[in-house]
Image 1 (cartoon, rainbow, N blue to C red):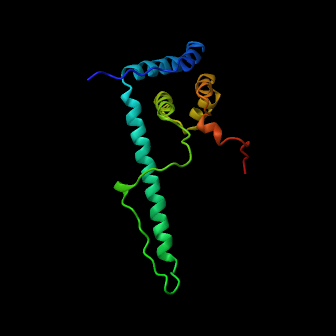
Image 2: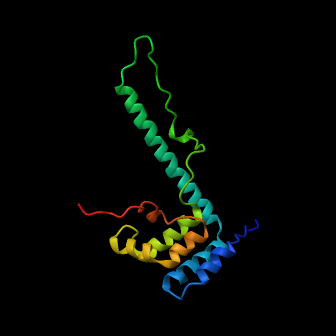
Image 3: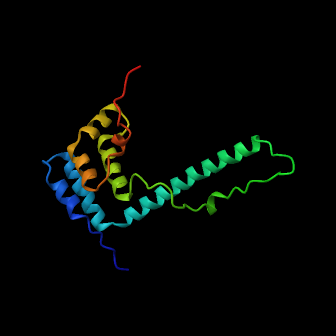
Length: 156
């Protein structure tokens, strides 16, 4: 079977190459090379994202079922909700995803390099990294961490 060739967006590659030599730049370039030779990584990431989305949808359905069981029916209007099985759930058009498979892949590389994406030190490094922000900007995306930081946090 012929292997699919993944062509990385030259704009993204040139953006990464434009930054000074750092360990993070080398890791991101290695990620680009890895995706060139194993583009099926993105298919697997997409399927994991879909599986997680179906799990969250199942949770929302279970919560609806719980609510309906607690809510009494009107006389003469007794209904049984039809709750689909998890295996039969289908993801329909909804909100667009904040991250696609490529962005998720690079965030996984960053997480492996920093040993975390939630510690205060890791968050500071990610937010302050011009390379990471440049990657997201040239893809027309916002760093998910910064999307929720539109207002200055306050200490209370």
